[in-house]
Length: 586
Ligand code: AGP
View (spheres, rainbow, N blue to C red):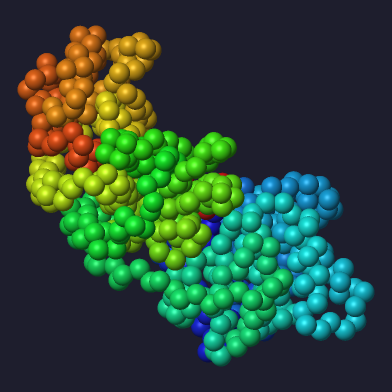
């Protein structure tokens, strides 16, 4: 994964500009970060473990530099493995994975490999090919040495990568290459040339970018650039995210959690005016693809699409996507960031054979540019790595798609829902106190639900793992007696949470499932509008909600419990360990 940026600017002080750009890129990883500036024939590097906020802004006043924010793939989190890497005349930053890096290491057995990263194989390969060319050509014009090195190294290296280089022999030029899925854009004016993994990192300097396509390489400097092969890439206007409002709580997670009713209500208005049914023919079959929370939003969406629109729907994790040959269908790809590599790769596999719709929150992202039709989820930028409003926004847009496809009007129910969400959010801190106490003192949590709340149980378990680092396992309550019931043990450090709205068509069966666990001594917590109907000691009181809309309310309780647990444990809320906001490697 990782984010990279490079800037060459006539005015100098690139370090500060790179630092600013890295703040935008932090969603791609925050294990460590670094900046290297070139001046007077030397590289000056500044690196640190952890997020950008701790990295010096004014490390050097040079006119050309590169920066990086890392999500570790190869090599542990350490300064040694933090980009930029330097070797002789070259400095490099990289996003992606080099799959045959160990082959490259074997190819140069006498070289003293300094890091544990696959990136170093790019550095070595490029260095050797540049040397090869320079050794046999006295006069070098038009960056022929770099063109040669790029051709050779992209033959030699397998994988997906975007790379930016500085070369002491070219003190005013940044070189770049893209192979595979790792995105890369450049911006140029008379004063500067710049390159980054995401156009937003360049948005303080430019309104436009040029996207580099798979297989292209080139250079950029103030007032000039070249892209090969092709050099016909068009300029694209950068769609900036609306200015972030100040956060109303200590963390972005809490802020985004609290804004959900308001954000969803705004999204509903925008969606109603932006989306007409004529945008889509009624598909015969729908395949929904996504990862993580987006996948779970898709799983809830399936219930609505099948129920309201009477269209067969299948939901798959993007990474597991298998084509059903011969089916005429619409493929809906769901992604907050629009940069998730697994989802982009799934899109690539469908080979344009089917109509594609992207439910995307970040307009201008790779996915939003690739699909036939974009449905924005309209929830604004989401900063917290653990998703709240982006996921409920995806559910809302899928709900609206399903109702529009079927002609059902649920606008009044949705307005009422947003009010209930607001009331519930105010009550959750009090209503969940005791339950959070219990969950904080067990090793294992089981979250059980039925019907359209099964995906919410999974999303709740994901939130708990992601924020609280506690083992949480979700399952359908109907599956209990087919095996998992054996796990229930009064002597084990466990609690079993049931999501149990009384409006559920499976309510009576849920009463029995809870009883089966309770009678075996399990520590049961019910989250329900009728907790008194259960013979249990612990509960979270919920408002009544009709079955179809229950996912919107029940996810709030799970988000809040996960947050409460993470706070108890003193965990980093907005940037959980080992994660990144956008997963840009497969
Ligand atoms: C959710 O809290 C996660 N951070 C994660 O599962 C996320 O939903 C997933 O990586 C997909 O991201 P996307 O929506 O940007 O494609």
